[in-house]
Amino acid sequence: MVLVTGGARRIGRAVALDLARRGLNVGFTYRTSDAEALRLEQELLALGVRAMAIRADLRHASAAQAAVEAVAATLGRLDVVVNNAGRYETAAFEDISDGQWDAMLATNLTAPFLVSRAAVPHLRKAGQGRIIHITSIGALRAFPTHAHYCASKAGLAHLTRAMARALAPEISVNAVAPGLIAFSDDLSDWEQKMRDRTPLQRAGTAADVAEAVGFLATCNPFLTGQTLVVDGGLSLI
Image 1 (tube, one colour):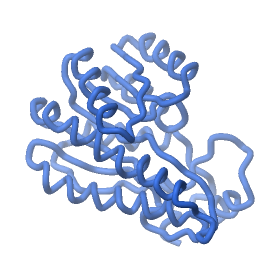
Image 2 (cartoon, one colour):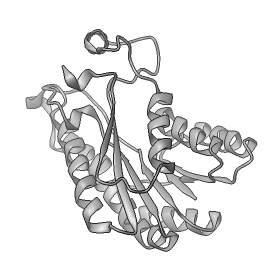
Image 3 (tube, helix red, strand yellow):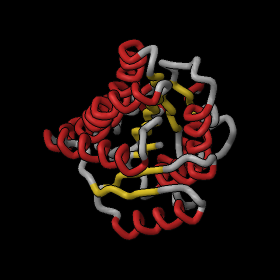
Image 4 (cartoon, one colour):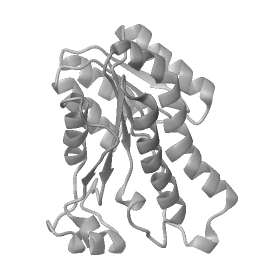
């Protein structure tokens, strides 16, 4: 009943597992992480839910459409879409190439649009469909060494609000905006500075983000067009 894009690793993996523990069947996409995808699929099945992994490059409309149709057909219906697949990199503004700009917007903004558009008929059929975008505090704060990333996530944040109006009342659209999320103890100097500035004095975890997504996927449906910021208070600084 749920499609999670970019589900094989990191935040996507945590989201898929959290939703499965809530009893939801989970389909997820991945682009290159074959071994991780197979491992996650087995873990999801072990939790007693139906699961499927789909290799897809969602930057292309045909691939996004095919992934949505495969999940809806295999799981029987589609109730929730989590647009998690994303791209992140650090670059000085004057060093950002045309290719880097295009790749960032294609992954972080175009792909969520393509997946959502393909999913709309299935979500409307579900009755109270939900779309959840993973944005970033980079949509709220301007980081000088991440201009293309911030622009892509700000676009996704505004797309969230526009879609919430366009797809109501059958479909709710919300977002989760993570702050600094650590996937290991090996933080860069910039990440350490971000952690130290965070009011709650720690980096976030993938599980922190997954819990927020799980809330939006299962809470009272009278909530749309909102962004849940999961950053330990960093965006307040």
